[in-house]
Length: 446
Image 1 (cartoon, rainbow, N blue to C red):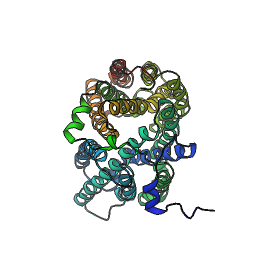
Image 2: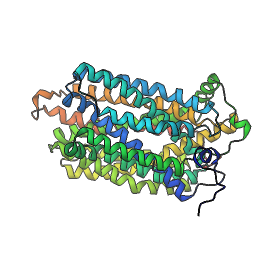
Image 3: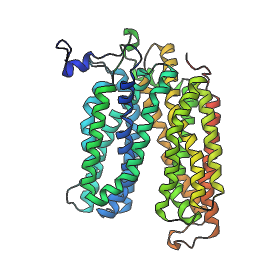
Image 4: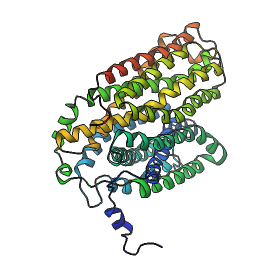
C-alpha cells in the first residue's frame, strides 16, 4: 500500500535527496540513460547526412555546412550550459530541473530531424538547421546535466566504478541499435516510422532513468553558493589535474574517431571485403567492450583511476597496431577483440577520473562544479571531429586515393589506409598516455 504522507508529483521530486550510497535499482535506472542518449547521438551522426543528401536531394555542400554549424553550436553550448547549471539554484536542485524540462523537447526534436514536411532542397536545409539547433540545445542540456549528476550520486572510486558499469553497457547497446538497428527500421517502415519508434524507446528509458535514478544530494550551504563566471573558468583551467586529463581525453577520442572513420576504407580497399562487413569489425570491438567494462571496474577498485587509465590506454594502443597485419575480415575482427578490451577501459574509466578531479576541486575551492568540468571537457573533445577529418584528408590524399577509380586504387592506398587505422591512432594514444602519466592525483580516493 502506498504511503499517503509521501510527497507526490513535483513535490516528490523536489523533496528527494540522496544521503547514502545509491541502491542497485537506482544505479541501474541512472545507467539506463546511456542507452537513449547514445542511440540518438549515433543515429544522427551515422545517417543525418545520408538522409538529407540521398532522400531529400539537398546538395552535399549545404549539408556539410549545416553539420559544421551543428558541431560549433554543440561545442559552444557545453561550457555555457555547464557553468549555468552550477550557478542556478532551485528547490528541486541544480540538475533535476534541466533534465526534467529537457527530455520531451529532446525526443521531439530528434524525431523531427527525420520527419520534414514536403519542401524544396532549400527549405529542407532550413528545416535541418532550425530543428538541429533545437536538438543540440536540448541534447546538451539533458546529457551534460546527467553527466554532472554522476560524480555527485557516486562519491568514491569504488562507487563510481560499480555505478558506471550499467551506464556504459546501456550506452554500448544504444550505439549498436543506433548504427545497426536504424537501417533495418527505415528499410522496413520508412524514415518517419523509424523516427517514431526510436523516439518512443528513448522517451520511455529517459523517463524511467529520471524517475528511478536521478537524485541529487544535499549539498552543504557553503559548497552550494554560486561561483562567478570568471572564477569558474579561472579555477577550471588552472587545475593541474584537469589540464592533462582533458588533453589526454581529446587524444583518446581522436584515436577512436580516426578508427571508426577508417574502418569502411579498410574493409573495402585493404581487405577487399563487402561494404557491409565493416559491421563485423565494429561488432568485434563493441561486443568485447561490454564484458571488459566489468574487468576494468575491478581493476580501478584495486588500484587507482590514474593507474587503471594508463593500463587501458596502453592496451588500446598496442592492440590498434595489430590492424597493420590482417588480410581478411576475420583476422581483422580478431584484432578488434583486443581493441575492444581497451575501448571498454576508456569508456569505464575516463568519467571516474573526472569525478576525482571534481572532488579535488571541491576540497580546494569549496564549490561543487560538475557542470563546469563536464562542459569544458565536452567543448575540448569536440576537437576530435576536426582532427579526425584532417587525418582522413591528409592520409587519403597523400596515398593517392581517387574515388573515381573504384576498386582499382594504386598500391599506396592500402598502405595509407593501414597507417590511418593503426599508426595514426597509436600516435594519438601515445600522446594520451603521456598526458595521463602527468596526471598528478595518484591515490584512489582523496
